[in-house]
Image (cartoon, rainbow, N blue to C red; front, side, top):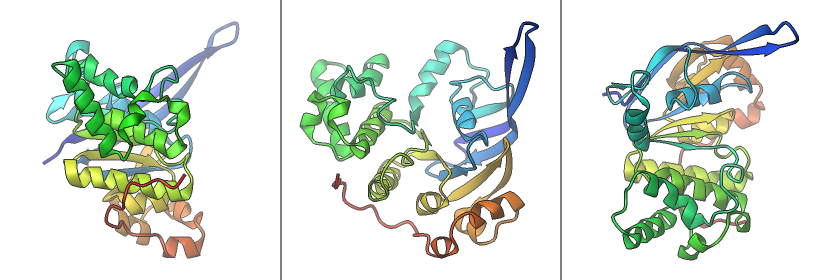
Length: 278
């Protein structure tokens, strides 16, 4: 069974410059195809500029692909009109890299988490909305009074928990996490990764996890897909790809990690507590 199917996805960016308006063309994605099963976590790795973020945003049609198709639970997203797409987007959530930049500093945490609930009319009353917000904050390890505070009053790891709570507000089937721990300290990274693993275990949520860090990917992901200059050059079980890479670019990514570190990459452990030591 497949929840997400990406077929022949390409994206070309065109920019115009100069008095004569010369066009510069950049093919950010080139014929990318893969499937994602329900409950699976697929790691998407590659260096900066390889097209990882572009791919994640094309999947949700935050940007329009130039060619190919994205089929979510049997429905082609490219064929959907805007109104139907808005309804389907309830089932696909995005967690961004910078938790501070992605949160409105003028809104309380309660208002931030409430926005998707209100937009999609998921609570019948104010009391039901408050109860839903309270439950979401508890699920990501934040106290109830966090709802009345502002993003700047929290640490980086706690802000990412707020982002995850907002992503969970619509009970999504798929979460696209774009470098969600790269801006955090190592100790806090582990806590957020354990939270994501716990959410998968409890909710059965599927994830497309974008990262440049093989250690993080091995800790969390069932499979890994390697993106190089917009092309998908290798995909397979995470341990198999790391131990026996087939593509030269994959080997170069692994070689860039100190040998001692790659030999002792931590395997995923059971979810730890949600206490944050910042």
